[in-house]
Image 1 (cartoon, rainbow, N blue to C red):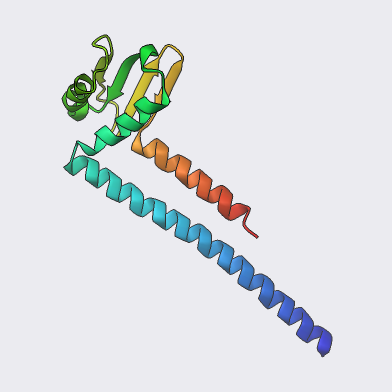
Image 2 (image 1 turned 60 degrees about the vertical axis):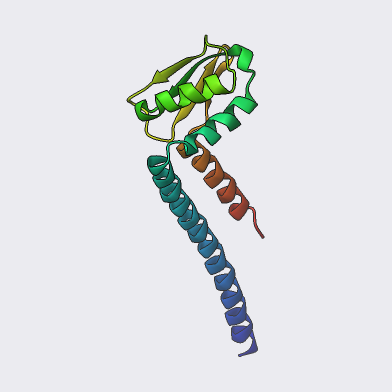
Length: 137
């Protein structure tokens, strides 16, 4: 009887940990889904929100090597104006790419490409949280 009780307690303890772990995964997925909707809605309503993404991406690369920035067609004029305002060289081409969704910012330089899009960043955040949840005790 004592052994059965001990086993039952162990099973309950394991079940509690498994349920907590599953709940953490669900909370992360829900948080990312909410963030995705809010950010996409914000960028659709206020195109200038995209400028923060562009500014952060420009800080990560050597702008002397930058030759092209691709964005959704609806954001090209706004981004062109922003790049001129911050003094980026005129040789940097802003390309209105109809294949990109709103919130996409792709910088192309002589060293490669930097995808600073909302969706790409959300995927990276999601991976980080997933790794953190997987490695949690």
